[in-house]
Image: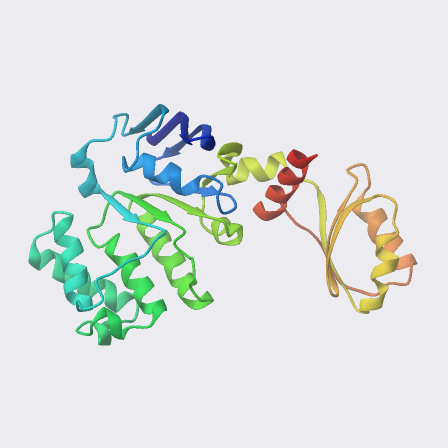
Length: 303
């Protein structure tokens, strides 16, 4: 069942086309990513979906209906611009947001206690927001958007400014919410994070849809003769680069991601490397990452 439908949506600000004929669908209980560089139109799309700003044209549906005010209690939203009441205690902040979404005071308090325990901030429950570090505040802001256990959750750049540990905590929470049946839409310009989460994606640039589909479909569509190679001697990299059938090569010291022409068998490639006297520690075929696919598409558009 399609939970969210965005069809032929447009939004302009003067001469600037922020969103250009954008379309995608999100199935119920899935995690979906709107991906693209800063300024691509991700935030504008989210704000139109939430009825914060109206589209100039096109159709936006939730459960096959246009947005209605009563839907707000079922939606959790984390905006890109963070903001908490610094003088309020963590407990009061979370309860306040819970009650705004229709929770009874005792329900909000119970949910708040469970969430701060889950993210490791129980000892800060009675502290003021201003006493927390920036990372702690970001986690509390994250919890304000899901404290009422919404069935639709929308995150705008949820990992912005988080360290790797806290990023992993939020990734785990998002996956947990999916297991509970929530439909999750999030935007990010960090494609590595999306790859760990998404069932489907829309890649956009300058407000236009560049690529849409499930992660599996996209990877299959852009599958290639792509290999990861680790060599023993870093100065052997020039020997590898000289093979005429290499289409693209990315070097990371002793590691390489190499795309070779499709008609070339991997056994031939490996044999040629060995015959050049290059010592190999690792040789494996890999799937193209979302980042690789996106960069390739961007290069093609710029030609």
